[in-house]
Image (tube, rainbow, N blue to C red; front, top):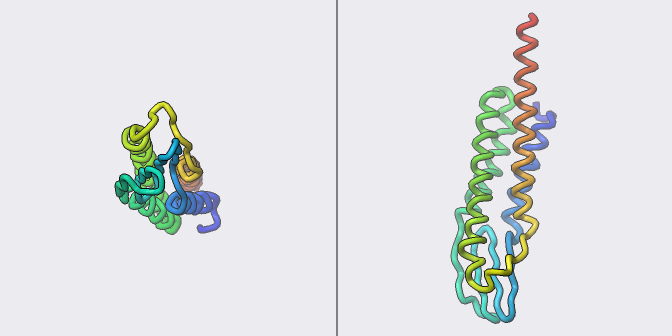
Length: 156
């Protein structure tokens, strides 16, 4: 059923991933230079000129895949085992997205200048964490539903 709480949580996962796509993930500003990471590019600027612009499209691809999988999973409500499988897969995609983002921040962006200054994480970085939490809670609720159905079948 589409009105279950786990459907709402999966919709929130998709919204968090779209929010990740729309906002900046990380930013660091120094004297005359700045570095920013979005889901599309890692941009290093000296003054007003772009010194390096590295594409990181696979971050956006993973976020789109995660949002699409969350929406698809909502409509798999008739088969809860399949729904749990897709939610678990979505957790792996979200964890991979988070890991790739942290990798680019720590090993690519942070070393460009002033490595002692860690920079500022944008709200979309935390949106991935929130999406993983919503995904985990949805998985627990789907499991509880499956357990209730099995218990009710046993009582018949």
